Image (tube, rainbow, N blue to C red):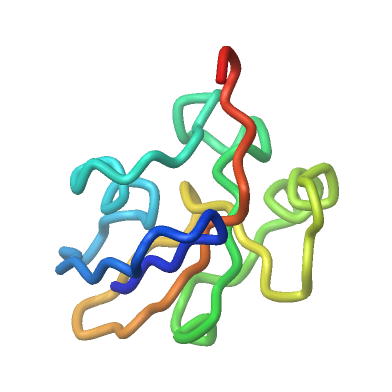
Length: 104
């Protein structure tokens, strides 16, 4: 899985295990990705853009779609990282948009 960043950081590629979410992989590899609800599809702070591999992700739920509508600058490729579960052998590229951390 490759992470790209809108804030100018170089891209990072990490191995993901089947069943992990994009949020899990980010957090396990010290990539800062907001997740105010704890990764339970209760907010839109883990919003990412899926650049490649989106067809292999689970279908978007109505609940996830509702939260994406509340995200900053949503696109047709927007997903919530907590809801993007990886399958074995999947190649996925996501872009983490600019994030607004409280206190920063």
